[in-house]
Amino acid sequence: MKKVLTIVLGLSVLGLNAQKKWSLRECVDYAVEHNLQVIQNQYSKQIQDVNLKIAQNNYLPSVSANVGNNVSFGQASLGTGSIRNDVFRNNANIAADVLVYNNGRLEKTIRKTQFDVEASQYDIETIKNDISLQIAQQYLTTLLNKEIVKISQSATENAKKQYDRAKITTQVGTTAQTIVAEAEAAWAREKQNLKTAEINVGRSLFALAQLLQLQDYRSFDVENVEIGDQLSPQLISVEDVLNTAYESQPQIKAAESRIKSALAQTEVTRTAFWPTVTASVGIGSFYNNLLNTDNVGSPTFYVKEGGFFNQYKDNFGQQGGVSVNIPIFNKGITKLQVEQSKINESIAKNSLDQQKQTVKQNVQKAQFDVDANYEVYLAAVEAEKSTKLAMEFADKSYVAGRGTIYDLNIARNNYANAQGSVEQAKYNYLFSLKLLNFYAGIPLSL
Image (cartoon, rainbow, N blue to C red; front, side):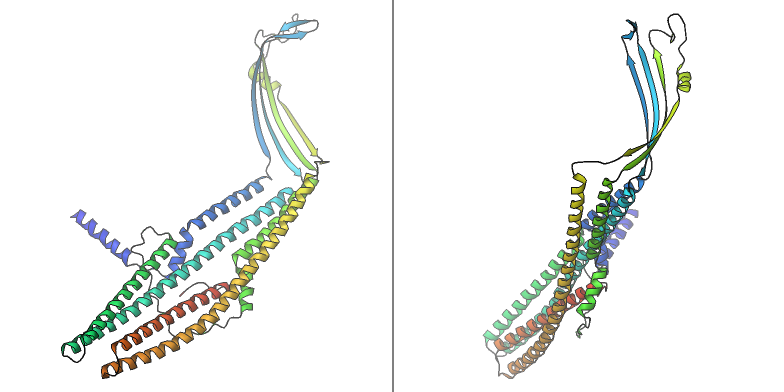
């Protein structure tokens, strides 16, 4: 019984998962959290975070300990003769040194690394934005394909009704057999169009699932969002959008941070012209053991060799010092490195100009697309009205016997195509408007 209950609950959970329909917001949030490119750049950001910690820790002193052992055997010189000198030596030292002055190199390095961290974070935001726009476009494409399915379903139902009517009139002898054959062929064509439209929905859902990097794409579906038939033109000026985009787009902010980083790097490089002052302190002791004797005095004056701890106590010493490293000539390398840093500054500034130019072009294109797609939408709506009226007249003419079934099928196809053109224009306009609003700082939503 317990096993059966587990299976039933498991199937229920699977059913709930299969019925879940994703909103645009859910798709965007999931993508920016799980996308591998975002994760890759997050690792790059973590590397910059560690670099910043390294730069900050350079203010701390360097402390090192050293323990050494040495043994030697053989004769040692003594006056005009020699003496046996087999010795074991041990020493231990602890030393610390700290940078006292370097013309602010540490502080400037920290500031430069902070700008690198900022740029890395903005890079992540840029990738998230790019992915969000891709998701939005594919999401709207999926909704469009679903609307095309509805249009195809309606056309198929009408074709089926036409076939049923033609079949009855043919049976009673009021119409020729060719009429029912043509009606059946028209119905078959509409069923084929419906199947193609359904496959296109599956294809667009699969593409969206691929963007989300979902493992199970077969049960994936999106919410059915109703898009109003009455679309209004946008009223935001390009200048306002550009001003907002220049202030908020992460790719521009990243370029600005990299300019600051390049300027800071030049200042870091210049510090090599200045002296470096380092202070050091240390403590240590040592132990000597004559292996061939315990007499550390003269042959005529015996002095017993001290033990390990006694020698360490007696030989304990401290030292301290300050060293100054003054650069005089290093083959002109520092000067050339400063020139390199200046070039990197120019590269960073040019990169900012490129990013601004790209954003400007994208905004202008989005504005152009918004205006053009809105005009296309208005024209498509008018064409839909005309083709619908023409279809109604063709249907009445056919019923009255003044028109042919071929004329009616052409009118129906024209109306279906006009409906598809309206939906296509509607979603094209909607995406271009969402893109323009995105640059204006308005979050993506439906």
